[in-house]
Structure formats: structure tokens, C-alpha cells
Image 1: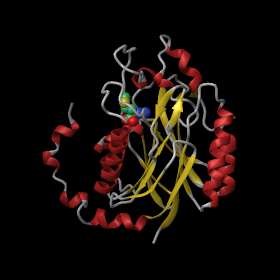
Image 2 (image 1 turned 180 degrees about the vertical axis):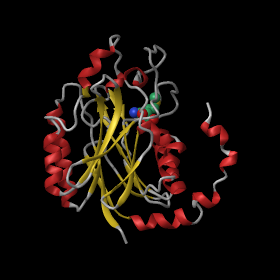
Image 3 (image 1 turned 60 degrees about the horizontal axis):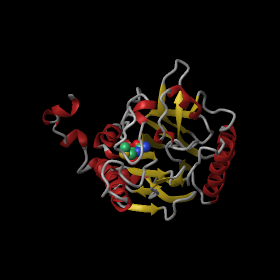
Image 4 (image 1 turned 45 degrees about the vertical axis):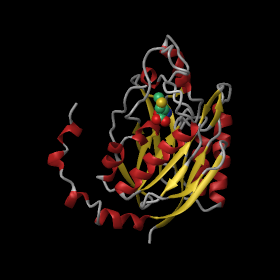
Length: 301
Ligand code: CDT
């Protein structure tokens, strides 16, 4: 048996006025709680260090560079890395990345238990729009401020487990899980910031948003025989509500831990990664059962 206690560090809202240092202090508090519960791998949300700034329009996109990090770790996040090393805890969190050559990505990093960055993922499926849209109840300008990720979907054998990352909207796409599944993934980590209402479809409220989030992650877990951890940034951020609903899903697609609040909250579950083997060797043995001659449209425009 390969058992590990995995945690999800759901975060409550981050306001525009909150400093990175204040946010990192909250992340460290969640890490201490996780350590007390025996967690060895901790998952934080998408854009964990700042407010979800793509809800704001700036004609000059450079104005938004203040929400981006040009190095990781940096002065504000180093204490989190130091604490993780002291506690021997691997972790992942999302942030807005500005590369040395001026590219902007919605990124997450994965560390080992010594706080070395072992993996980087840049969000592939960017939702929303590029220009200000007066028809929407709120803006969702990820396509304005980020470029689509250029690294694809990768996995890393980290702390004895095959881990892969995805970010928020990626969780709604079966291709995300299948790309990772084809590399033998055993733990998919997903941070998210999901507005609790659809800006273009009035009737789709919180209940249905939570349902679609669960549905996507449970299906992805089952169909690829992997654990999935989905972690929200939740609550009312700068006057806009983000849903919670962080969950840990097992390789049968069952939810084994669920957040109850919309604030900073730790969820955790013991995961036995040997449980991924059964599905991968039977109904989802891709090498034996896939019929790629019939999947040609998936790889074309
Ligand atoms: N952050 C993010 O990707 N949020 C999206 C909102 C979709 S509506 C434009 C999500 O899929 O949850």
C-alpha cells in the first residue's frame, strides 16, 4: 500500500488591498493545520496570492502587471517554502507568472517535500474574453491578461506518486484528465476561482455551478482511475462571490472529503495510491481498450 494524507487548503476571499505577505501568512496557517493532521501533500487554489484580478478591465494591460510574480519563490513567498521544508510537506499553488521575456501565464508550481520546485504548469484552457463585454454581469478577462499555457500537460513522480496539475477551467475538459491519465497520473491537483453565477446565463446559480464542478472532477477521476483534489478560492472578493466546494475524489469517482465553508478551510483524506491500479489495469487499461482510429477529430481544429 502506498498511503499518503493529502490536503486541500481552501482559501477565503483575497481583497485588492490585501498584501502578498498577509495572504502568505494565511497559507502558512493552513499548512500548520495540515501538518498537525499528518498531511504530506497540500493543494492551494489558483491565483492563491492575489484577488481574482481578471474580473477587472484595464485598457492598458500593463496596469495588471502588479498582480504578477516575476520569480518564484520570491520575498513574499519564501517563508511558505521555508515552513514546508521544515515540515517535510510537498505543496502546489497557483499564481500569475510574468516570465523574463515578458510572457504572462496563469501558472501553478509543484514542490517536493524539501520545497524544491519539481514541476510547473501553465493553464491551457483560458475561459472568458479579451475585450470589455457590457452584456455580462461581471467581466472574466483571462484571455486578455494571460497567454494559453505553452508547456502542455505533464506528470512528475513526486514523493512516490505520479502527480499532474491543472487549473480551474481545465477541470471541465475531459482532454485534461486523459492527457494526464495517458501518463499514468495518480493525483491530479486543481486550484480554482469560480464565480458563483454565470455572467452570461442568469439561471445558472450556485447550486448548478457546484454540481458541474463536482461532476467534472468525479468523472475525470473515475475515467482515469486517479485521485483528484479540487481546491477553491471562495467567498466575496471585492464585491464578487466565488463558490467554494473544494473536494477530494478517489479513483472510483467518490467524494471522500468536502469543504463546508467559504473561508480558509483545510480538507484532507488518506489516499492509497495503489487503489489507482485496478481501474488502470481493467476497464480503463488504455493500451488494450482505446480505439484511437476513431478519435481523429479530437486532435484536429
Ligand atoms: N478561473 C476560471 O477558470 N474560472 C472559470 C469560470 C468560467 S466562466 C468564464 C471556471 O471554469 O470555473
